[in-house]
Length: 500
Ligand code: FHN
Image (tube, rainbow, N blue to C red):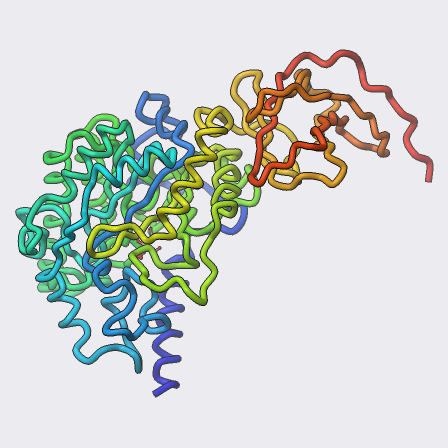
């Protein structure tokens, strides 16, 4: 039995690896050797300058919410953990192996009959997100199990069939919009239990007819969402890696076109579709497919150059993996507030947004640890908002002490690693037209001494500016040094090269 499980796992892992092979997110994008003709490429310019896209660029922090039928289970059932039996908490329907409950899929597919979140309060969630400092929310309207959290006309398997009955998506859109938080609807294309869905390319006439029905169903639900929820800013598509969807590139091209025409300014990420050569996220000539790079999932770019100037967001779980509610957070590493703040400023320093995932339980309560983290993150974002929102990448050598962000002639360094000598050393190219002139501690406004230090390293292209921290300044969280950039006071002395 153990062996069987091992081979099943191996198959899943290999499929996933094959599916993701076309999405490179662990290094610089491989540029295609030669240009090819692309008919079904991007429908929008790579760097939109309209107000909606400018707003996307200034978000900084977002909230992801995975909520659905899987939230009732909480990654376990009758006291038995699905850990090791299901790939992730929101994948619990696929629970297999020796720990899986008898007739589990049938049990799961009937869970909607008990979905009645007594404590669900969209306004409370929206307020919490506002307090945390989130500027946009991505909400799961329908995950891979196909259960719709809105009363869709195109499937019986929706919230209206549950004891709760009411339109959850509308409540989320209204509550978050009222708090000034932009709403993006997460929509899974693949549906595990839809009889017309298939992962492989439809071959026979019957399969083609079925999959065409599925494509129309998908189009109908998306147009329905745009009609029902006109206040949304965009879609966050998922589950688009199967060969069947990839083969429907003409349909998906036309569908994206139709969605954009129906909702001017709509923002769609790179995960929605592929070109006629099967290239996803980026077309076969390396041009982004969509308005922002949507592949930084549970990973961050190590270098700014890997982004090729594209907009992007990174989405992150607090547990190692697992987007839906997990009741038991023991015996796994769950990210701390400091971890998440580091990832946030890492992302923003490279012109990205960072999106923290929350997985409420089946009653509509966030996990207690999520409540704690939201509060701590909010305390920090309130104090350091100037370095986080509406800022851009600073063209400077990266700092080992933290992350630079910049707005006009204001340079911010968010320090996570305080040097033992309390001197924050900033490397600035010798030919820079702007250098740190004055510095203050953002949190207190206290002025700090800034001194240029020509260390004299041979062949060094940089000079250095040392900002001295007060010895008695001993914060428990990352802190921001705000610097005013000015023209350099004088030339850097030219030293004789070392003779060796
Ligand atoms: O399979 C999904 C997963 O359940 C989750 O929704 C994440 C978050 O975007 N996306 C896919 C895994 O990459």
